[in-house]
Image (cartoon, rainbow, N blue to C red; front, side, top):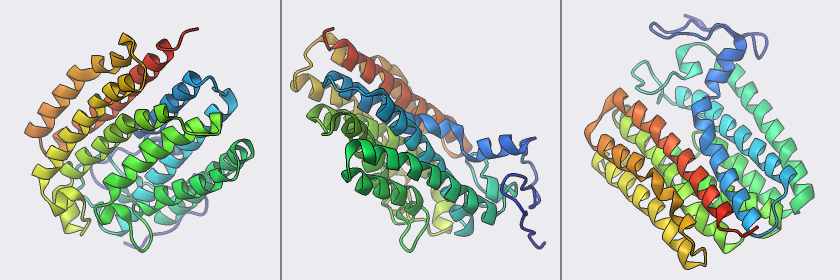
Length: 319
């Protein structure tokens, strides 16, 4: 069947949908589905934590914080759009896909339209970046360009990170160090030690989300020559990696205690430990589509942990 490209960005219905896929009833619903809203808390959580760090340092600034939030959300959507089109074109997304529906692979959106949507979202993120540069200085140019490159280069370009086992490191760096530290920087003009330490559990739990995805898709990724760590070193390695990331995340409050937050509030994130224990048990026992639930709940764990961490930081500061 010959594909016929749609003439405009939002009315695209050109490709026939695959059997068993439920296409959203409106163009808005279609694009909202393609944006993968369940992934957006992973982008918002680092900004919340970084803003809490800025508050502790007596430098919280609302407008830069909001700009950082919207910029992070746009970059996450851009990464989702890039994954949607480039994974399809590289053969990683097929009818055998175990995860949630991808718009291009399901035939809801043409590759050309998804590329235009990707450029639109990147343009909006660039506009927000220009504002942040005016607030925090030219160093934000390097951070912004690196973030945009990371969002696209995960699946695109001559050396896509996700296809060479570098996705885990990229997620840890951009969702942890860069996102938390950058949010603090645009409000304070520097990155305090508190932000560096707080970025570690955020980066670990964001990476754990990717690990679940890679464990679930190891078989189909291997066929597509997508050499994730779970493909290179086996599903067993991926499970061990998941546990190690969880342990490191929950060790972070000890680091905060050591740098001076000595009140009981610093250990507030440990209230989410039962959820982490349950997820660690499930990833050992479940395979295939059942891991979609583990993935969704790991994203929820990141959000809960991040909110509790931010609350702990706020409560530890005397009024």
